[in-house]
Image 1 (cartoon, rainbow, N blue to C red):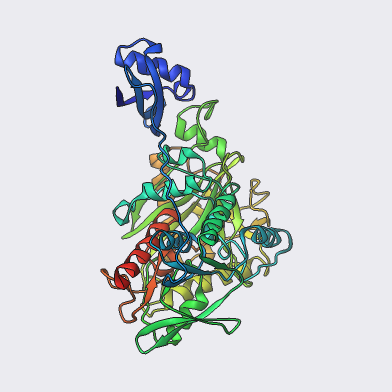
Image 2 (image 1 turned 90 degrees about the vertical axis):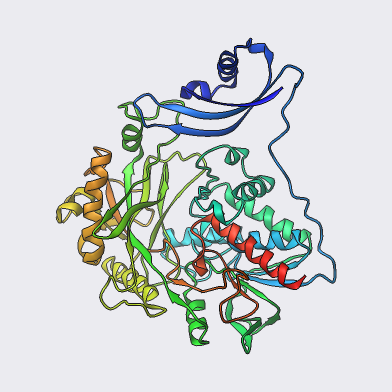
Length: 520
């Protein structure tokens, strides 16, 4: 018999299949050797009580059934026909790559145009940012094969289940080399050290099946005939005909400006702006696992998630990276932007997350509801922080307690993972008061929920400003084409329709399916 059962067990039991088998047998009133096979289907940490438990959904085989079928479901990607219709995909981030896979699955030839370099060459350019302070505007943490997700963590948790099948995206990632644990864990994570190989495997599938992936091909504008997209113009002067999926990612400011100059309709969009907060990981383990010993042997580096409302705006943690590092995430010179990432082991001594405030158009004086106003707010703040750093990448930092109390941090700051270095800075004054005042109140509220979270052992590093796109490219809800332009499919984070790897991947797939319905 095959049966699924749910149970809550101690971390040590969840980590040992022999102990887990015995626990399951006890739960079912069977002898241990009567359990022929066992597979964990879902796994989540329940840290609400002092005694930590692991919540599991387990599939067991007993009686006449001896084994459980594997959970992996592979898509059989076949080569697209020679005469297949094609579609241009601008950007090789999650939206673009998964759009390309869906195109192949549906018999359409994808032509992926990526302004940056392949994921291996990109690694070299990213190292130069921290070591030499050199930012390649086409190859950095935002641009290049894999997009912003490739080297900024690889977290796969999403609440966007209404947009499409999350399981399908996870299965495709496993098919291309990701660890099967992402099919099990409640907060799946690949890691910045593992994701590049997955991305390369996806690229190989695209090319093997007749698609194209062109690197260092910078799209400058969409080619229009009347109200119809007919191709793109690249920096090299190439013209490529066909429908266009615009999957640029959230930092493609030149594309937004080019569209605006072409009088393509854009809408200003709310943003979230703030800082990157860094604690010692051991302290977060102590707080979240309710013990001085921290996480111990069987638990992973602890995470947290906080949200509150302050003066009518959301204040919340974003992109939490347990056992991670803070990285320089600017996409051109003259900017200072930080983000966070974790390797698969999440083994660093630090925990970091974005701590941001929701900003609506008009909240900050001078930045209203014009299409590019929020983009200009991002740029102006990033430049302000860059100037504070003496036009270097040495980021301003402030003790968390000093920020809340409106004081300058003195003396030596706590050690940080940020590779380009930090200096004592007044983040409480560098940020607009509409942001800093809400962050202060937010931190006090979070400390009430988790006593000890507000501490002088934690530092704020700025600026965290690339949480999402500053514009939304409006599209028809049914066709997913731009509201005014036929054959133009705005997709993913860059178009304002996603917020992470999985939701962007789903959105890219949805755009291809919409195009396919149109041409059939």
